[in-house]
Image 1 (spheres, rainbow, N blue to C red):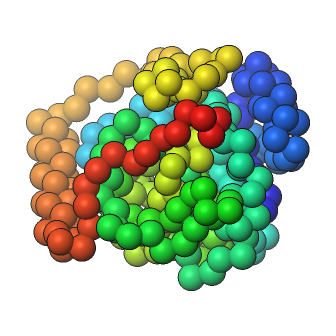
Image 2 (image 1 turned 180 degrees about the vertical axis):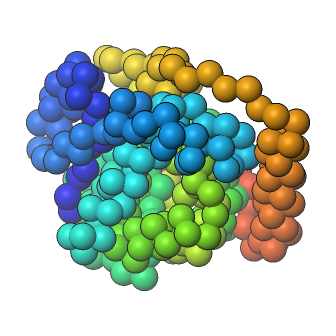
Length: 265
């Protein structure tokens, strides 16, 4: 299975660190140049970034558009791919996991990470991977993290079509609100973003802060009272949808932490 690594041109240190990690794991990746805040105009930013639950930062929009590039790649090449951000720390069995995931069908999306928040998942696993060391659980509610996932062509098409049905937003919020996806969670987690490693006692030589947090908006804006009201109404609508989703899977799923095994890294 091909691995797409989203990486900004200026993030040479991250790229070099990934080359070392992939060599140790006997894996290859294809670099996918990330979209930067310089790749869209002020007009394009204002057109795309103000239709969700809150105004998006330029760096958040760039992140979303980078993931969109990956979805388009999956559709164009008609093959499942791993989509990784360049601060992903992978488990030792990552290659075995991907070999097993390649054999599966009737799946759109597999979340490979945890990001410090509980998720609502099925009570029993559907598949076992990597000599029964990892399981796949159907996931019903997830709210954070796009550090690493497997996307199948069916899932990529669903996400691209979803852009015609609702406003774009933060990449993780957008993906996890697309309930049409046949989505799964791997357990224990198969990767962590480096800044989450200390939280789970996972050894990590290089810890990177989020690029989104580091990049400051170069465009200032003042919201009108009407715009503030619209953002508030969208947030309320989203919370109602999330509440209905929770009721739908009450008794079927369980809301809990996804396990992380530090010894697997």
